[in-house]
Length: 156
Length: 289
Image (cartoon, rainbow over all chains, first blue to last red; front, side, top):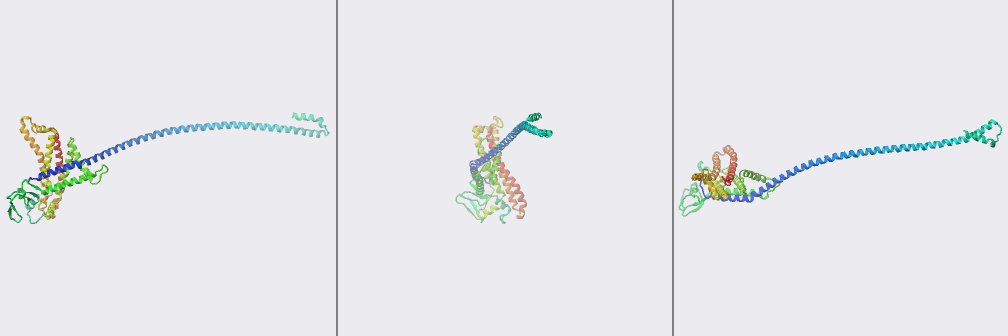
């Protein structure tokens, strides 16, 4: 084993390689690695935040659903009430209309009856005259006796 | 075995010799391959032809294979990681970027656990050491004869492909770490503070020489232990591979495969230990005792 100038040659090349490594190899690689780990950390944070946001959104949706249900129930209730009201109103109107119709019909009937009575009355007078003629077999002075017959007819 | 004309001893020592380019002094007697020798008239820079020549070159020599491979692997590291760093995206990572990020993250975690001050250099130092040493060690898993054989075909006599089995390489790196320890110690505590740390503990002031001795030994032990631990592990591992390759080729796999699998653990562990201890030592340089 001879110790010789190789020692210093090796020392110099060592220094050069270290210098090269310090200036051109180490900084960019470490910088890139640090940047990547920062990116990953940021990504993880963002994912966590997104998860929280999602949970919050879920909660909001649930709250809104509950509210909507309550509103729907309210609307349904109102609609039901209104429907009942409409039905009641319709019933009342129907009753009123029915009574009105009944009244009108009754008035019509009375009128008809009166008219029939009147007709009957006038026909009874002539019937009675005919009957009396037949009974008396004599000629009765129509003028003389028409008063009596008319009185009779009016008494019917 | 590389060539049948070699004895086992020659084969092993051939595998353990670096491609050494150095200065032979004037008057040096070189022995050629044919056994003839000639005397150099003046000092000469040349490739060593034998272990003796390599040793005689002394300090003024350089291991071309060690430097070549470690440069190649270091550049491979810078190129491949630099390419990822250029196109890196904070989006979904794919392919090689995954791997690079895994390594960077591993080192980053490790450094953050040990080093609690602010210094943009520490983590890149840890990464460079870890990957570079891992790649150097990884060359140990290339079958021991392949690259030396190829080199031989190209006329290169010696070729050791695992830089971390050369004590020069490991010492070179740990020397770098040592300089950083000194630099940051002085930067953080000042010359006086650093000196006081060496002189006035663990015992009170009256034991200054003893303290100084203890602390300086402790300080110097850091780079030495870093270098020798890695060197020792890799050298031993390589040695075992070389010895296994002395077996007949049809038997080699029975030992080399288990050893290689075990060695995967060793090379990773050694790279990790060197890198982590460097960070620990630098953290200690920052801390006040």
